[in-house]
Amino acid sequence: MAQITYVSELGQIRLFDLDQGIDHPVSLPAEGDANVVDSWPTWSPDGTRIAYFRYELRGGDVRHSSIEVAPTDGSPPVEVYRPTGGAPIYMAWSPDSRRLAALIQEGSSLLLRLIDARSGRAPATVAQGAPLYYAWLADGSGLVAHVGMERFGAPASRLIWVRLEAGQPSYGAVAQTPAEGLRAPCWSTALNAVTVAIEAEKGSTIVALADESAEPVTLAEAGLAPAFCWSPDGRTLVYTSKQEGEPLYSGLWVYRVDTATTEQITDSPALACFWHPDSRRLAYFTGEVANRSLALRIVDTTTSEVSDHGWLRPTRDMVQLFGHFDQYVLSSRLFSSDGESMVLAASRAKELENGPVPTVREVLVRPLASEQPDRVIAKGRLAFWQP
Image 1 (tube, rainbow, N blue to C red):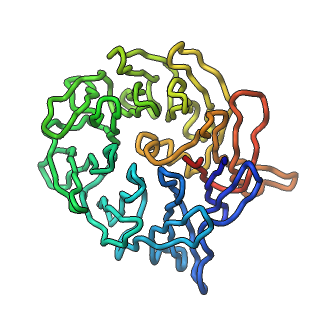
Image 2 (tube, rainbow, N blue to C red):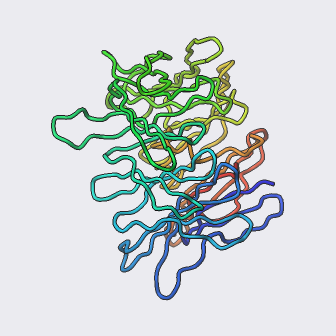
Image 3 (cartoon, helix red, strand yellow):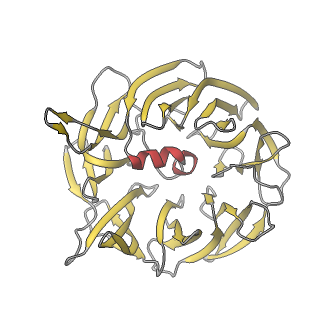
C-alpha cells in the first residue's frame, strides 16, 4: 500500500492512496464559525497514525492551537494536547510510536514537551531554551537535546541527556560544548551512540557519545554550522558544513562505520540532503535559494556518480523543511518505500494574457528511474510518504 499524507491548499490534512487513487480527509472541518488551519502531518513510525497541528484563527490571529492524532483506519482524530499559551511548531514520534516530543513556541523561548499519544497522561516539559533541537534514543527511552541558553554569560548552548523512567525525566549534562551553528543531534544505531558536533579550534568535530559522561569518539572534522544524518541502515553518516557568509553547504561528505573513513562525494553546493531507502544514494537540492529555483540531484555514495532529476520551485513549507533538514529527516519521509519516487510540493506560478494569477501549489510524485513526468495528485503545500 502506497499512501501519502498531505496538507491541502485549504489547510486540511488528507490521505491519498496511490494504488487505489482514493483521496479522503484525515482532519475534520472546523465547528461553528471558527477558521481552522491544519499543518505538518507526521506519521507514527508504525504507519498507523498521523499527528498534526491544528490552529484556530480569529481575524487572522491564532486564538488556540492543539496537536491531534488521527488513526489511518478512518476513526475520528483525537486531541492529545492543547497548550494554554504558545503554539506547537515541530514534533517527532518516539521510535515505539507511544509518545510525541513537541516544540512549543512561547514568546522568544521554546519548550520541549513529551506527550503520551494514547493514555492521556499530562505532558511533561523536559527542556526549555532557544534554539532547541533534539533526537530520540533508538529505544524511545529518552532524548538528547541541544538547547540554547538564555542566561547572560552562560555558554551559547548545551547538550543534555534526558532519560524517561516511569514517564518521569532525569537529566545528565554533556561536558563538551556544542559547535557553533549546530542544530540537531541524531542517533547512531550502529554505534549505539548519539552523534553531535562539538567545538573545535577551527570549525567543528563530529563525534559519537555513548552517554553524557562517555569520552567522545571522533568521526569527522567539519566546518561551520555542521549538519548530518545517518543512512537508514545506520552504516553511513552524511555530513556537511558551511563557509562563512554562504547560504548553501559546501559539498557533501560521508563517514563509513565499516571502514572508519571519510570521503567527499560531491563538491556541489547543497541546501539539504535526504537518504534513499537503499542507504547507498543521497538526494540533494542545489540552486538559487533566493528565488526558490532548485535542482534535484542524486549521488551514489559508493561511486560519486551524480544524476539529475529536474527542477523544483518548492512551497514555502518545503523551504522551511529544507532549511532545517537535519531535524526534519528524523520525522518526515520524502522517498517512497521502494525508493522509486519522491513526493514533493511545488509552487507553480501560471500566467494568463490578461496578467498573473495566484500561485498554484501542487503535491507531486516524481519518478526517479525513468523519464516519466511528475504525477500531480492534489493541490497542496506539503506531503510525506507513509513509513
